[in-house]
Image (cartoon, rainbow, N blue to C red; front, side):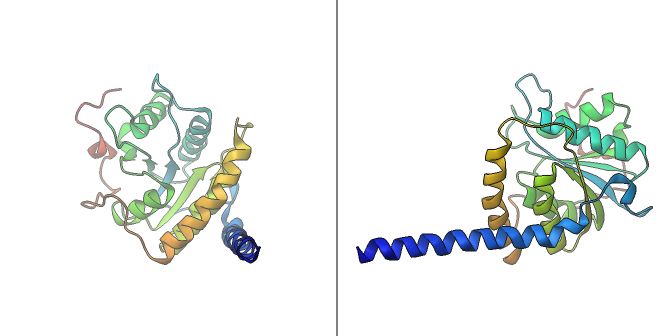
Length: 222
């Protein structure tokens, strides 16, 4: 009986702590989620579009398509001079960033203005590499609103001045599950930021002043 009480107390404490951290991250980030009209007028380094799932036919999922469309719209309205596509390309047969770049090119964005981060395996790694590899200091992040709280918190913790523009023009299947999972992801990344965890890969710096085609795979074709 005593053991059950102790376990119940420990579980309650852990749940309370997780919810408190979750609320803290939301509170710290919510004021930097803005409409496109509220973005700074100049000096943003790039539009960072965070990756999401792609289909077997190499087309973006609904969530990713909406992120891309919003990011492309920002680019065409001169919110920033470059787009940084950051996603998972950890396996030859799965490549989020090439799908993302090709989609943007088909929508009229010049290839040289699109950079790809092939090792953006998580939100934390995407932001860490945006700063350390691509030299980003002031950016606008594009993803769904529920995801922006965490992305903006990470950016601030890493010393990046970031604004978030949400891309939520429709309802997504399984969103309730994503919202619950995001609580744990926020808590995990709180500690990643606290201990400045290094990403899976770093590498040589890549200047956003050059052509984004430097980040293309050797067999990249449109």
